[in-house]
Amino acid sequence: MSEFVTVSAAGKATVHLHPGQLRAWRSKRRFVFIIASTQGGKTCFVPWWLAREIKQKGPGDYLAVTATYDLFKLKLLPEMLRVFQGYEYAKAERVLTAGDTRIILRSADAEGGLESATAKAAVLDECGQDRFTLSAWEGIQRRLSLSGGRVLGATTPYNLGWLKSQVYDRWKAGDTDYDVIQFNSLANPAFPRAEYERAKRTLPDWKFRMFYEGQFTRPEGLIYGDYIDDHVGHLVRPFEIPKEWPRYVGIDFGAVHTALIWLAVDMGKAAWYVYRESLEGGKTTGEHVAQALRMARAERVIGWFGGSNSETQQRMDWNAAGLPVMPPGVIDVESGIDRVIALLKARQLLVFDTCAGLRDELGTYSREMDQAGQMTEAIKDKQTFHRLDALRYVVCGMTYRPPQGQRVVYTERATISPF
Image (cartoon, rainbow, N blue to C red; front, side, top):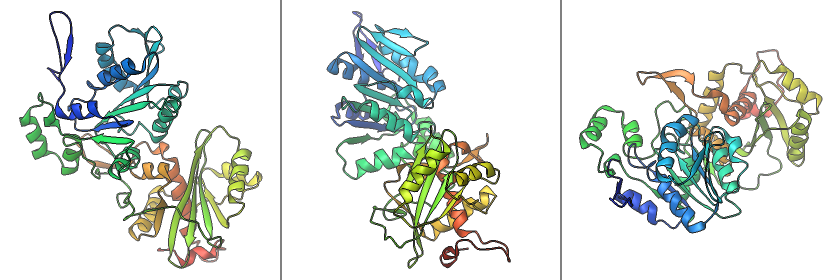
């Protein structure tokens, strides 16, 4: 914004806030999110809000986090240096320091850097991007837990992931910890109306509404676009699952991230409920197996499915550790995706609203777009969707029908299969 800050002859800076920024400035809530349009004046506002928090709360550690390292270098860092001119910047550590006050500068795609600080407040730039994950957001909240620190998030909406389900929807439901401020590009007095009208005339409606209006819409290329993340759609509130209901578990193996998705089946209504999820690392196969068996001890788990076609050794390792994991039966990824979509369309697959990680992945799992803006068959960042892989494995395992003459291991599934 060309006139966002003016400096007098005496060197005093005056910040000129437009109405959207002013609403965020005046908000007293703990988690304040500007979910607004491109070039609306978000990033330039972030350091000033943090400067006020530091003035009010005094010396200590503070966090300034953006989605990726490239965004940190190109956008957030220049704005931070412009505001915090009296601070010393240590490039190697990515820390701004003035006396006993530190501003720790991090990117969300390197989550390890978020796990070492105890902070008094945090600002998050472009926190709606795909690389700014739910686990990063949860890590930031842990860093603020001792101080009860406040957060300012600023972003354009990019998907229907955790920002929608864990922030926007909570605010809409009346959670007083959250405040969401939305405005379009024209809220910035410096933004040309002609450019706004050109974008409205030429862009797909979903893209214009997201990037120039700051509104959540269903983006093109979303793979599970039939999933509706509300209680009228596919969400249900947790309930006590009857002990007699059969249960199945999908497993996505990984040295760093092992995901488990747990399904319970209401045979009478032909409804499948995702009631539990986990994503953990740093454990041996034996430790993963022992934990899964403990969780299944009082439950009627009759099928464990996991891994891609090539992960025979991982299944053998889990089997050797005491848990009989079956291959999902369907090798092709796209065929597996189709099976999940079929259940969503039939409203047979429902999700406990406590499964925040799976909900986030369902809202961000999408196709890559080419340079012409056309959707391709490639899945964007496919290697990061561990819970959805586990879901696909268990759905495929439950609905797979072996060729004639082969033994059917789980006969109960045939009564509810839509295929």
